[in-house]
Amino acid sequence: MKNRLLALFMTAVLLLTAIGPVYAAETDAPDGVPETPASAGKEESSEGEEAPSEDEEPSEEKKEDSEEGEPSKDEEETPEEGEDAEEPEVPDLEAGTVVAGVSLVSDRHIAYALGNGKAMASFNPWREVTRAEAAVMLFRLLPDETPVPSPGAVSFTDVPDTAWYADAVRTLGALGVMRPGETECNTGEAITRGEFIRYLACFFPLRDDAQQFPDVPADSPDAPYIRSARAYGWTLGDKDGLFHPENTITRAELTVMVNRALGRVADKAYIDRTHPTFYVDVSPDLWFYYDIIEASVYHTHTSEGSAESWTNHTAKQNVPPVGFQLVDGWLYYYSANQGDVLRNTNYEGHDFNAAGRFTSGNDSLDAKLRTIVLNKTNSSMTQEQMLRALYVYTRDSFTYLRRPAYEFGAQGYMMEDALRILNTGYGNCYCYASLFWYLSRWIGYDARIYSGTVGQNRAPHSWVEITMDGTSYIFDTELEMAYRLKKRYDVNLYKFNDTRNSWRYVRPEQPS
Image (cartoon, rainbow, N blue to C red):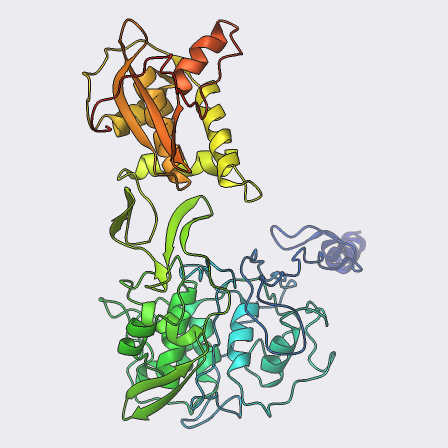
């Protein structure tokens, strides 16, 4: 009997042992990984094609890097159970290797990094660089005889054949510079400093005769290229001796690195004398100013040692008219004599800062005024249509609040009172006048503000005047607002010429 029971027990154990693994294989999954059918694929990327800026018309030729683009991240495949996640391999490269098999052009100083092509051009020096933009800029620097692969020759499945960056991305892919071995390029993704240095170093004999930056991991695939860049002197690191390889690279940083790699040193005297181009967002006092001009203007030159002397350049074609220019809510003044916008100076009562922007002298007020102008005006309006829109905004957007009057001829109250009405929504005539005075100047009018009196009883009052075509006109937002509250819509104090002095405005000798 004992033997029979023992035999039955052993049989049961054997059956459980056989069934157990099958059951586990059907139910167990790695932590955090949902069970999906084997046919389920990766979600398609929503990344859209970036449109080139106005001076970039897509063609088969080398074109301008795009302006704005949303970065998209590579999708990460979850490793299957029992598999280790694939680690990026550190390339085993010998010193002297030119990975791309071709060098960038350094003897001809072509323009490889351009602005947006507008008359009041921007360069966006602090903006991140996308993979597509980096490809286009390096593509421009390739020798003319470099073959461009035909569509389909390089298997980036996310690069449309007609995209403005397609030739550049395919060429760099074929050279083994950009995303070798990958099937997707993710062209809209912002690239890091380490990744761009890898691209750039692929076109030069690699060097290993420099100490690595302490913040570059030895197992990083970018490590040998960063070491080579340091040996060449393209990058020096920050004050702490760090490279920050994972930080995204900016357009300004890119031009500085490329110029150093190509031995392109801007001729500062020539640039200061001729002003070959300008960008509203690149002031001459910025550390990268000359590098951006060097990178964005085609020029001929002679060289003596490390010194470069420009002999001629391609002139800027799209030049703005002389005068006030409103760009992205900021007011500038373009001077043909300087070939640039006015900076760090006063012109016609307008103070311009180092960035070339008109300023009230208060950053908070500047931001509020710019927001109002952006919201209440548009580029299709004439200057006077903008003025009317800002007058109506000031007249209708606030509530009157009685406050003590200022003395006749009072000075310097405008900043405080403009901020008061904007921050609280309430104000008296001085607040209304101060805000409209700033807004009218923000769009290029040489407006004057007065602290005087009005009416038969000589009531203390403040208003704005602007001279147009030789005639001085009154703009009284607060007084018109008061009459409208009484349903007196017939009273119009916008561009009012009181030739008969029927309203008895009394002005001090000097505006406030």
